[in-house]
Length: 190
Image 1: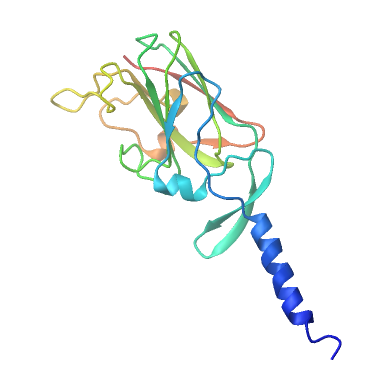
Image 2: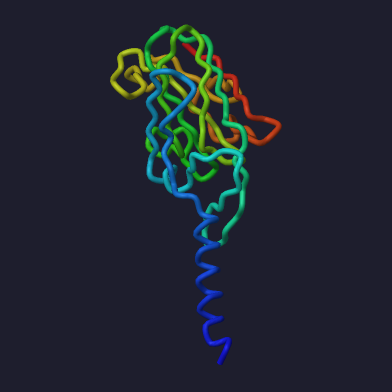
């Protein structure tokens, strides 16, 4: 009789332990640039957390994996056409349709203060990603294109990929983000 509450106590301890391992999903609210706006779509909100240098649990399919969030990803963009027009940076994972403007993992929007932008992107886990970016010269919230679909706003891709005939695919622009590699340089195409 003296152990009758033991099973209930063990279940309660397991629930508390599991709850403390899962950090609540967050959105990217603060960045290193003044005037930064960022939006996060639903997929990003489900897997993002604003804590850095901590262990977190990320659910993928039916299994659970533990990944360490490391230094924020730094994106350095040069050759901007305007010193003040906003720059939108879209992050894509392997499962996103790259470079679709409707299937990003995360979207960040920064207001530069010069012809070069150094952007810090928080809440991204180690992994393989690709970036598509553009400078919104007319401020309409979408990349400008001519009649045949060629961008009229300055744009760029990770790995400084320059498309020749068609848009790049994920493998053209993919990079590994980890402890040793956490900076991406992009030169805008005008």
